[in-house]
Image 1: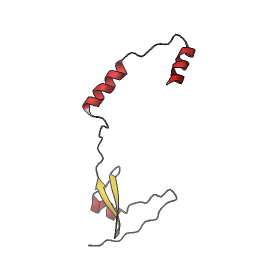
Image 2 (image 1 turned 90 degrees about the horizontal axis):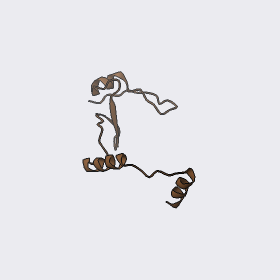
Image 3 (image 1 turned 30 degrees about the vertical axis):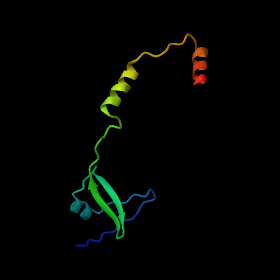
Image 4 (image 1 turned 90 degrees about the vertical axis):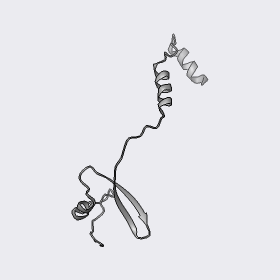
Length: 87
């Protein structure tokens, strides 16, 4: 079944998905939509976004260890500046 609906593109590139299409896709406020481009045109698909850590548990453990470690304390701003410049 081919359903044709139209919508205007705003100056910000936004388009309102017609209500009839939202009902077919079971899309409601706050839902995520994936866009694809094929030979026939643009494809809209409902999708779910899940958070995924960029680090493995071992990497997180290393990061936490580094974050909890005490850093070097400089006696003056000049000393700290010299260290930064040497990096």
